[in-house]
Image (cartoon, rainbow, N blue to C red; front, side, top):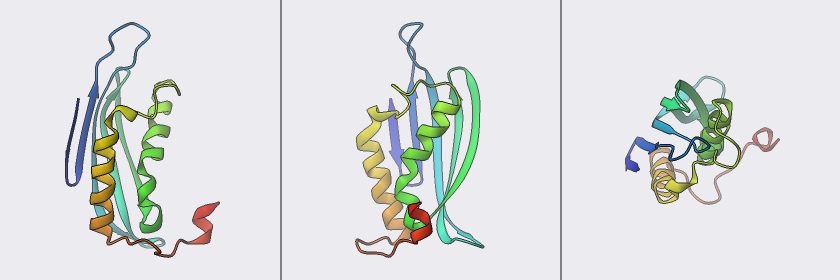
Length: 120
């Protein structure tokens, strides 16, 4: 199950077998200003994964904000979701809607500059 609204994504999956994965996550995000990186997006992931409570926040500068799914995947792996399931990819259309909302909120446009140090 997944539900998207601007600034918020809820994704939930219940394990069907003992080898399956389970999560119930709320991903909230808002535009914020970082003293070093400038304008960007603050993401807060709360809920549970594999029966463990999750509460993690991460900031992505404007030129990296589109990469939020990679950060969510790394957090999922940290909490025990196997790499084969960690992309939490069944919510692709919701990620697309979230991506568009992030772009709108940060006024991101094709051709916007990227800081070279963010490419490393």
